Amino acid sequence: MVEAGSHRGGAVAALAAVAALFLTSCGVTPRTNVEQVAAKPELIQSSVRFQKEYLLFPGDQIEVAVWRVPEASRTVTIRSDGMISLPILQDVMAAGLSARELAEKLTRMFSGRLLNPEVAVIPMVVRQAQVYVMGDVKNPTSVPLRNAQSVVQAIGIAGGFLRSGAEHDVTIIRLGKDGYLKAIPVDVEARGQPGPFIALALQQLEPDDVIFVPEHGRSQLVRFLDDIVLRPTQLLLNFRLYSLL
Image: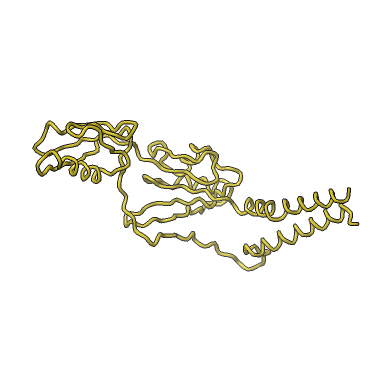
């Protein structure tokens, strides 16, 4: 018969061994007298190019101009169901399409009633530019760009960092002018506790930026140990203690 105390002692020893192995695999080594130089954050770029195009949304106001047919032209607001109402065509789905796609769609639809129609769709009033805060923040959300010119403002509106959030490793995902998505780490140069917040306050945002706050290494280690070691070990101890009764 094996006593519960010996099992708990073995579990603690196993936990310590796994923690040491995990830290070693993560490259955490004891400090030495060798001088270490911090490397600049690496810029990651997608291998595929993209093109940004505004998609119409309920509440947007657009002008539909049909050349030489003024009675079919209208300035309309996209309804909550995504539709617009036009003479001749009645209801047409507009939400989720770009202005170019909607113009092509209306041209095809008008072609059944008009001879060689030429249609232009001009966005007049559209929703304001947004940035998006994701990851280990209290309330992941979209934020109007006019309310958050810097990263620290956007994170503040999202409720701030969780305790597991790595404020030193915040990354901005942005579609560059060249069409490539880029992951841009916020470079923290200032030392001390305020350092990351100074860097985040200096980092300006652009429309459709995605701000990603990752989980810091300590939190990952705790979660790893809890999922892989502590919970299975506790279940094993409970099973053996139960079998001894």
